Amino acid sequence: MKDVRLLDTGFSAGEGLAHFAQKVPDAGGIVSFVGKVRGEGDVKALELSHYEPLTLPGMDALADQALARWALEGLMIWHRIGVMQPGAPIVLVSAAAKHRRDAFEAADFVMDHLKSDAWFWKRERRSDGWHWIEPREQDHGDLARWDILPKQD
Amino acid sequence: MKDVRLLDTGFSAGEGLAHFAQKVPDAGGIVSFVGKVRGEGDVKALELSHYEPLTLPGMDALADQALARWALEGLMIWHRIGVMQPGAPIVLVSAAAKHRRDAFEAADFVMDHLKSDAWFWKRERRSDGWHWIEPREQDHGDLARWDILPKQD
Amino acid sequence: MSVKVLFLGRLSAMVAPERDYPAPLNWQYLLDSLPEEARALVAGEKVRVALDGALLADKTSLIAQNGAEVALLPPVSGG
Amino acid sequence: MSVKVLFLGRLSAMVAPERDYPAPLNWQYLLDSLPEEARALVAGEKVRVALDGALLADKTSLIAQNGAEVALLPPVSGG
Image (cartoon, rainbow over all chains, first blue to last red; front, side, top):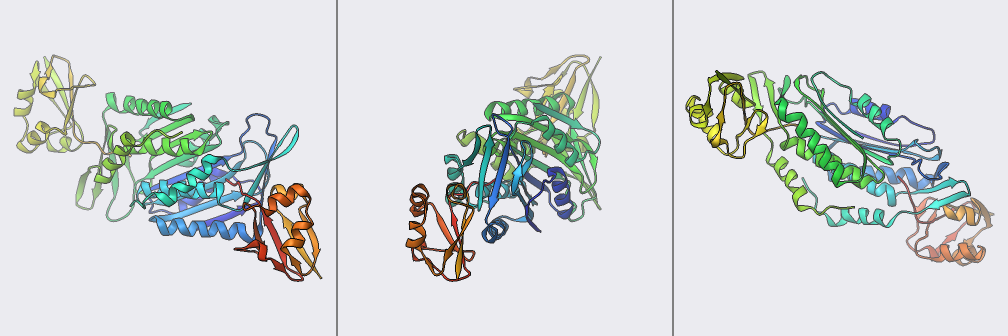
């Protein structure tokens, strides 16, 4: 089961997860990640832009990689685009598997790739205007783990 | 924010997660694990027993360990006891953090310890009666990772 | 004048969920009271013992007085 | 007879979200048309280029014909 979506309006993470859980009745474990717009500091809004011909196909290919690498019952990747307010969900990733290690690793893998290897551009509006956000060094380090780590069963 | 519960009646994982998410408005990311009774094969029911004076205090100490080891905004550990039907949630762990690596590692750590280092005993009812379940070798291996792995920021 | 002994996990099926013993209760008396299969398991290193809710570092040193609760805890399996 | 060029991410603020160029469009012409700061960024190795939705292995070989869409893609930041 694969559910990959690019969403241009707000969504409820709870409803998304409930929807996904119903589709994977045989999964013993589901690992989910919800990423939200942080409200700290001076951030008034966040805008995520994308490039239509690459972004969704790239997410779909990422899902296929994860489904090929781990024994999953299902994988959900939902990602917002457009302008969001602090507290709004940006991304929802959910991996269902018979064994929890597969679910943990697949969700972690997908998030690392969405963070610094997917076709999204992010900017924040603060009181002095818009600021583009680049990936942190940590994000590139997280991504490199998957080339080094042996596949675990 | 710490929310540790031993539950003797059914719960909704979706409602639990929604409840938790409201309590950690400053978290950029929330990693959750939902473990369910597997319906495969011949399993009619699952019973989880515990030892009152040790089980909840042990879960609480586990939560404190995770809160001390990672930079978390909050941690939720809900665990069922009693008799459950296939498909019912057994465990719900949710870790909220500013940065997703902390949330992933804390949730993973808590699950590994609940699986083979917490005071629960599990048996399944199949068509030929009750069968006690012991941790898999894999579970002990998962647990040992946390003594070996360096703490990551 | 009695000690309550709780048998957790698979021990509850091998012996009983709980039993009362005369106080004071020591380790050898408790072991000798058990059916053979349970005795071998309880004597082994994988079974921990709690006295009044606190784990014993050395279960063979058990001496439980009147009104005490002893719990025999086989290997766990949660989550 | 034109080529549409899309500027993604911070390039959209440095140049414009999109611009039309006369066809055929080659890499040097495109570079020369950009303001200095954007030109340095686009010439650097971190900016990828897509032609009609497909990434180019070597962006300097770009030749876009009439009706084509070129996208200039600076470093990403998702999730």
